[in-house]
Length: 207
View 1 (cartoon, rainbow, N blue to C red):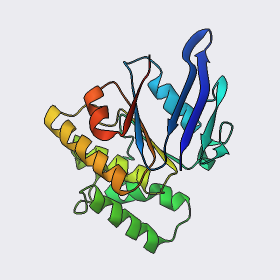
View 2: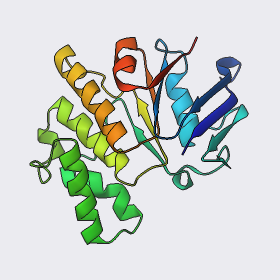
View 3: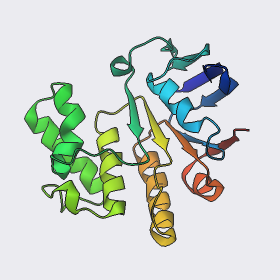
């Protein structure tokens, strides 16, 4: 399921954040957009997710124009910089959240959560409070939660921010393997070129 962004622009008042931005992400691949802070990377993801409406341009997902489609109807997953885990839910229930919203039956929810938590290396902590997790574990839970509903495209906003270098590099390798093993179509934004080179299949530099 491919993602095509064509001539997307976005402005806050008179301040232009994005101007005629175009990009194509081939099905089952990860594309990274690399740019410094304040260049519109997060804005781009929010437009694809439907959290912001572009001033101009179109978003096509799997041959369907979703430019004006409500967020909850896009089948887009997102991993935020700060993870945004639900502190009152344990690891399993964080991953299960989107599945419960979609009315999946409990047996299938449990099976899907177990599958994904094993995939991200957290099968032994699924009943643990997210408040007790390390930074790296929290990021793995956030990834599993975003993947759980099998989104048509996964958006990753600086997903490895705040980790020490050794853990950062290890998780970057893991993330690359997980995205490929799940055949996920993904769009990553980051300021870190090395991170982009490890995780993604192709790189686009945003000026």
